[in-house]
Image (cartoon, rainbow, N blue to C red; front, side):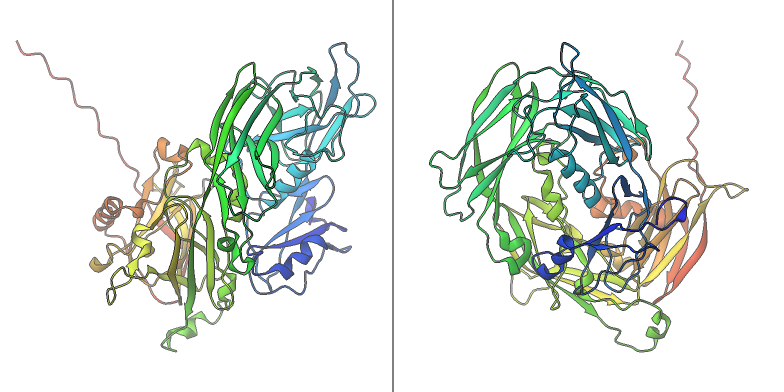
Length: 576
């Protein structure tokens, strides 16, 4: 559907499986998209069970931000909303004011329109970036360019250079120049352009600098035994992870050297990646990918040489997901409306618990492979894991399921399995952890409602989270039974799903300014002190809610009394 709820005919629909390695047949739809008919309707048929990302493309249009559902499962009905994309247009001239003809121009998204970090992973963003990188936007014989189909956000605009390409496709006579950033500077001095959905921003004129820039060069080590024909080396902008250039090193080359030309002054990261193929049936784990530790490089008026990148293996973890059916038929009658879920439809990832580092942005595309889905036998592999502590994150295909346990085999035979949900699991480089078991059960509960304050039951004025805390004494360390969600800012609404049946304290906590601005804020229940604090607040609140199997509480009004700042004590009089 388009703006005004009008159907969009002829839109290309693509379905990308989350687990490409174990579901390669479904990639056919990515290369042979279906088209929407005159009523905007479409059907992608022949899909295997699993989870998919669905994207609709139509020239000049982008997916609406309201279409935030990340994954769809076969059998579901999808409604995608396309809105008119933003446009940036202007003219590129040289120092004499003459038009620069045939120069590649690209729009580089820096942040979202609300000034928050750019959301990563949307395939629509990838397609837009690919269009710019491939140089599809060029200046005409008047030096005029027009970049269309942009999502809302804050951008920089650059003319010239390869724009992240390690090769020349649809090349330009200005490919060997360092790019010039609007209005006539570098990434550090270039101005930002605000683009809103459907708006056309004109007058973004660039005075081309005709500058060759500098070079960064070095070599790759640690690639012994790899079967891959070439290795990728990425040059990314420090602080943002924006890819400035890509280079490829042949495995057969004795020196295994790389070089980046046309580099402007600034701060960068350089990192390399390679692999030996492995067994594709094993998913991301089977790829056996090696990466180097990113090297920070400062370019100030000259070339930088001698950068050595040592390839090191990444860790992986293999496991099995199991869906337990009801043992007792009695409570199942209340769940008859729940969608029947398959284990292949569960989306699994293992985000790192460690605080993100600036150099983690050096290989931004690793996020594209962070998710997987189990096979029909429930087996899954998570690869490309950096050293550190990881937690398992599951996106469930049905509100009728809840996570019962996440365990690892005990270190000693006949001992109890290790609770991997409580403390996560630590991996080192090249670790191949096996035996992780994820047990899910039917009969989950749900709670939807809104937080109200004061006699007039108005929404809270401050941002806050709603927490469910297990009230049973023996559940103090059952991390999977702690739930938290941020309330909506436009009405105080909240929704908690996939809840294990049981007794809970319901509490609300205001978010401090530091918590609001912290992009990597972790759930409070991840550490024992946080759990004890939540239980203390819950016990003091006396607000207990008992959720039974398959119970769905809706329109729940949660009365919250805002915290009252203590008055400042009067200053003591000085002693006489």
